[in-house]
Image (cartoon, rainbow, N blue to C red; front, top):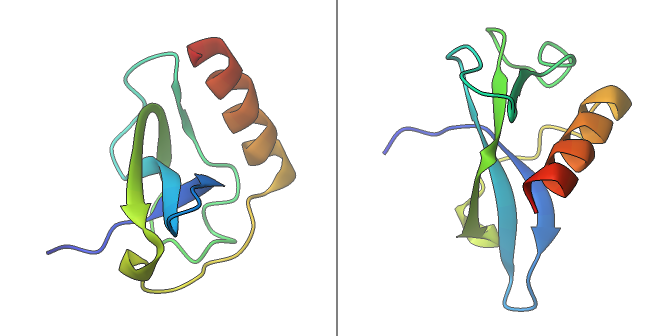
Length: 85
């Protein structure tokens, strides 16, 4: 299975994480945006956060920690999640 980046936006008690999927594809709706700090995160191409694509995954499924979100990226994610829910 291909390893893909994701942004953890919350955690459940059962050791699973609520995640926003990320992709190298361009944004396709108002809930997608290109991460400002994609290079800081060690990604090799501009990366889109698909805030409308919320999922969950067990914490053990994550292969490595890539750091905290750039403050402007985190603010955009929070704003879009508020609009979504």
